[in-house]
Image (cartoon, rainbow over all chains, first blue to last red; front, side, top):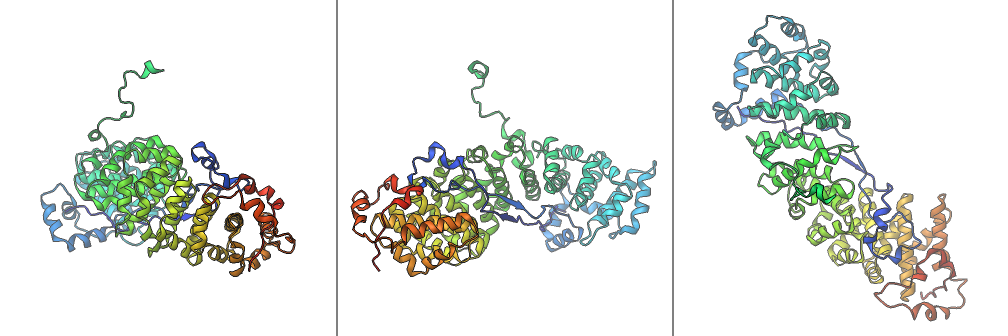
Length: 235
Length: 347
């Protein structure tokens, strides 16, 4: 199945402050030529710079439900996906349960704590978390963070299996889309996410970009962390 | 210095060829991936304080490349990214303008999709807020032929941004002011917005008129008056904040001065639309600058009872003034205005 990104992107909203001070140098620079009408007038003339603050955050959660609705509405995509490198269908058969809630956090976290967990177990657990975090309303992000599983999510970004990497990146994308964006960075997700921008799998690349977009969209200092870690070049 | 760089035949091209970087954008696996990567990239460029130009600059050629493709689905995010990058000093504007996107951006102003028009307009607005040459380049690309419709756009933000853009062209050289004033439809629409619009739009429209009145030639001022600028400006006095009040008064002052120098009864126009009463009221304004400016205007142009000797006027100003040429500097200096002879009234 083809990846469909959420179209619930927040719109840019700028507050336009036009009575702000503007550059006087831009007015009186030599290239402006002579302007006798300006003499004695308020020096605050000339070109005014934009000075606005962006009110809304630009972060997107990737929702399970939305994606499914879109996929069902477009059978062509499903057909196309059958031969593609997409993994959604595989995941759905691997983990048959569709619905996870905060009540499932302890049992899924236990799988991560088990040193003998197989890749299949890990896939089940990360997919469970991902689904839990992809519900439309109030995903239990706090519960997930409190269960101290984010370090494991980050670790799974470096797993051999693309499917697991993908699920981990999706789960982290949805954590980053909330007010807990900083938690994602604190556990060192940025460098492995940047690595994944160069993955051989396009779904993994896309999900990594999405997660980094959410991190950068949270605050200028996080954006700079992403840029200074070298995220631009592999984009 | 030269010897250090002598080996570098093409100093602009410090980057490897396009294909080696930003591969997800240059050669996207599919449109979904491209959409998401460009959106994420726009977030990399967004926010204040801004990221260092050097960190985001490598993306610009790729964004420009997308803009010349047929992938209109990514145009909004491409243009948001360009608008974030070009928001600021001239070097940021140059970094974006140098990729040759200006013509394409202007073309996209006519797009039906407001989600494309909005960031496109912001980017072009940034361009004309730059240096004289940067502004002129955008004017040369014909932007003024493409913004008129936007002054009537259903989206308030688009009308406001369009006014802001025009006000920055009107803040430029005489040629740039002429280019704006020549656009009769634009001018009519702007006057209309000064008279009646949402406050944010009205404010920006007022800036356009004030910039023309204070920076333009006498002929520009006459054009403004013919379009009804005096009553439009006076209508703003009732609602304006301090900053806007100030630019309205400066505009009225310049208009009256040009009227006086060309023996046109602009004073009468101001009075007819209750402007005199409004300015008189401002003489009690709590803000010092407003109060002083309004007193100044009243004394200079409306001091009829003191101006007994009406014969003085044409002899001094009328003879030296020539239509369409810069006005005698002396008459333009605010500090000297009170020493000027008074204009006779002809009601």
